[in-house]
Amino acid sequence: MDIALAVLSLLGTAVFAASGALVAAEQKFDVIGAVFLSVAAGLGGGTVVDLLIGVDVRWLTAPEPLWAALAAAVIVFEAVRFGAPPEKTLVWADAAGLALFTATGMQRLAALDLDPAATLFLTALGAAGGGIVRDVLANRAPLVFSGEIYVTAALLGSLSYYAVQAAVGDGWALTAALLVTFAVRTTGIVFALRLLPGRIKD
Image (cartoon, rainbow, N blue to C red; front, side):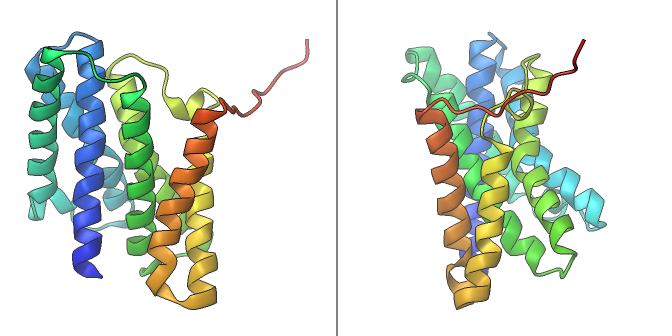
């Protein structure tokens, strides 16, 4: 399980870093800007969570995630020079990264025996944090704040982890969180579902 968790975490880092490279290309950044944005997207959420729970920032002690982010940044940024990617590539890459980070975040944080509410919040923060950092640095409205079914997907995926863990044990909990998060986010994308905005009456 530890190997699977490490592989999925690296994949999530690479996918979010790739989304950063796609945003950089859209914004006409140079390759240095693209790399910076991609690394921030791939590592930003996990870094914040590590700091909040008081552990060493993982990519400082084990640099494989940093290398995965750097490689994804350069490969994707250079690839788009040869032609525009398919429509909504960024949206789907972001959805995949969200699902991977939700699942791996729950697997890691649930083992710390934190309060369940804290675990859910930290998982959502870790899963969505890289996307928030990416969009803020690129001067875009973060998906989290635009009514998209985004953090909702991470929260439902996290809750499914707890539900499956209670029902059948840890074995399928990671898979459930991954699939539920991606399915909810996919539903939001395909059917253009949005949360209703708040209103202040005049």
